[in-house]
Image (cartoon, rainbow over all chains, first blue to last red; front, side):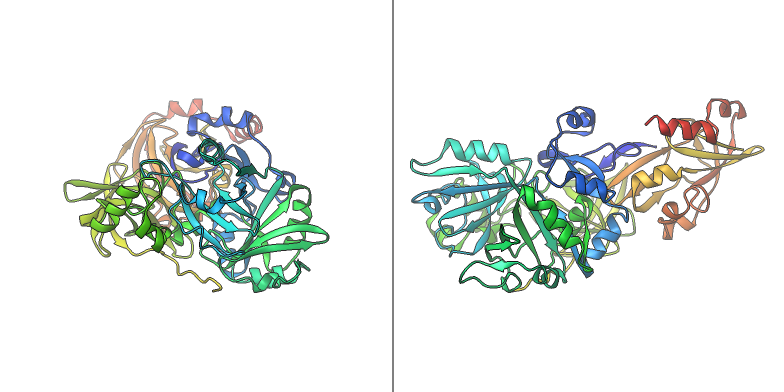
Length: 406
Length: 122
């Protein structure tokens, strides 16, 4: 057997030697050996290996692709119970100082000034021309803003923001923190049983609502917990000092609802949930409206503008973009992968940016960009795989209905 | 007699015909298999060239013909149940059968002991 295409994290050795390509990977398939030499280990590395994880290079780190039971079992477990994900490769940043929110609005199209303490928002870091440099979570953490950015773009984000930092503001990378995600319908039950104490005046951790966050302690260790995630399920993300991460992960894994879940299922879960992956579905060449992320441009900002590329982006909002990110459902069982071209008759009308198998859907699913004229739900298209055209349909995202605790 | 390739295919030879599949090691490396693309019966395959494609949740990989020959039959059960390759890679999860073009090509392949030693070097 030999390597072919792969999207997302792939097995090494036999078959593909791919890593996550594009912006979120540590290079193309050929970079395997080189990337391995320079791989950083994350705080939970030893635990992953003890749990039987297959480790792969991802965003410059050795990360668990899956554990013994495999991607499909981990995916389905997360949809039914609770999966524990190590996402410590993500960048945890803070911005502090007078006027931090107003300053961040000069780089992001979200309403950061209107974000109340303990509330978070999905936003985008935009280049001067409105292209997407990263997608990120911004939280009003009281006396500072907390950002979670993608692992592969962390360094470039820091450079971009650092070069534009206003006087009096401080931008920090909290490299000594791990980040765990507990996702699934039983996540709140499991986390609520762990003995996490709220900060004075705060709510119990399981009472956080979707897109709320707060400070907590567990066995004397400070935690920052948000009700958010990247799976289309209810769940939490837990920021924890690196030295306490393993004890916290072990305590969670001791709960009957919780099993470890790797990057493979994280990718299939987010694809079913219709969530874009930076470096694949989003890039500096995509702007927010065609990416289907107009919701991240807050109402006030649509009126006021004042973010990078505002003219281009507001024009796309008004006139409609030339192409759109859409869901694609191939007929039959054959998956279509990132890079496959999309056709309407003889015309090439788009490209697949994420594709694979959806375990909860029980078949192949994909997303990609197609010309606006072919982007309506139900449009019949063809996707080319290995020289053959497979019939597919444009379908609404998500493939899997979200169930968030609002 | 069963032979193995360095690309993790196996071939079981009975006279002029042979059955081809991927090894248990290979299915373990690929993970959950969700699709197998098999050659049309009658197709002439060449030693070391693509003969089939196997796709797991995350990746697609080529399966090479261990020897040259003409495909006579494919494993129809894989169309509805590709996970059969995970469950029984070297048994019920076989891919296709062929008639050998040149039995001398088998001489370059490994036996089970040699393949296991080869896996140990990875």
